[in-house]
Image (cartoon, rainbow, N blue to C red; front, side, top):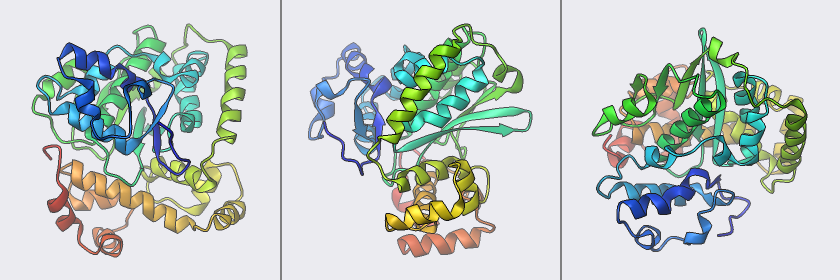
Length: 339
């Protein structure tokens, strides 16, 4: 299906495995896709779908017996190849740390609805994934994203590196042991972010598939692809904002530095598209805030801190301005996925 330039979209990737998973469980694909603007032939790894359509598909599948962990089932047989050229680029890097950092730098080639990040956490690193599309995402998207990331790390390192811990911004599932067995490490639910925790030693692991010449070629091609994407500059700013929120208060200057440009240049480019930095910041904060309220049991005060507000009351005032109601009232009306 065609995806408009303004639609927050995600590369199909692991979702291409859906017909096979459904066939194993005797669930007709047509039943899952009924009424959606997507056909079976659209479930090819290299194609893109609106992330709200992917969310609906995942939630519908999860209602069937044996498919409540559909995200893990879709990721189970995947490796870095499922990421397409971006995955090939990762495999050509010298170390795991450079592979993950490079992925973060070019990941917008695979998604204009969610951003990945690589943040230091004490002596460790968080390799994570966060959605900033305005529609409420399915928790199963986070499952498949972090499970695929775990497989990618495992595959790139020949099975040597595994996460020390997995954090998930989703409610505790009916059988949390399924997740612990899959990741083979502690799993923390109801967190403010979704990520793998990897050690500094893991980041220095030298990849057996490293190829400097191939890396340069693939990186050049992907940078050219990113430059030709139809999404406007505002989309790039929102993509940068989502992971930077986790680092605390996000300023105009911080985002400009992240995008490697002068703050005034960034301001002018946003003005040309009829938006301001503060408008985009509020859009991302609202999207993430609603997601955490609807999909987790995190206290409102902790949601406020995650979004970079100095006090819970500042977040409550902003949320009232955006939605006309309080965070608590909104949560009560929109709690889903067993939260």
